[in-house]
Image (tube, rainbow, N blue to C red; front, side):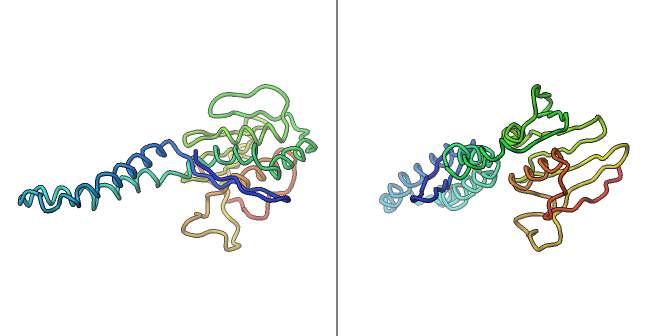
Length: 219
């Protein structure tokens, strides 16, 4: 993870980039910067072989940009790590964590984190931290009963949300028609904070957040 922590006397902000492909991205960029000038300086000595010239052109004209794009397209999958670092390093997030300690969760809820059922008392901070652990192939199920639960999973750099309200009553969360959906944010993808607010509303019997609506699923 690479990031810059900035701030003044009143606030601080973390701008970061993380991902399993970050080392590869750096190395491809470094090697390209080092090798390309050497090839250019030796241009007058290149063999007059059109096949070799085409190969060099393909590698640097197509191969390198394609490699960088492939390495960069999934960078949002590291959002949970960036989110965790913000919580740890920025005073505002620390204050939010302290405020969550006063949230009362009366239900005897269970958290299933990617197949592992967590034990112990449910708190708002524990729910928050469990959501941080949902990676690219993970999921979280917050259940009050076997057929009463809300679940979320990581998808396309964000999260999808579904709820079951007993029996065959399955629902999918969609963005409310408030103009927040776009090509970059699909109508069924939500941010970390939006998902946490939705899970916390379920856990505290609070109303559904205004930014989403439920659509019935017929399975």
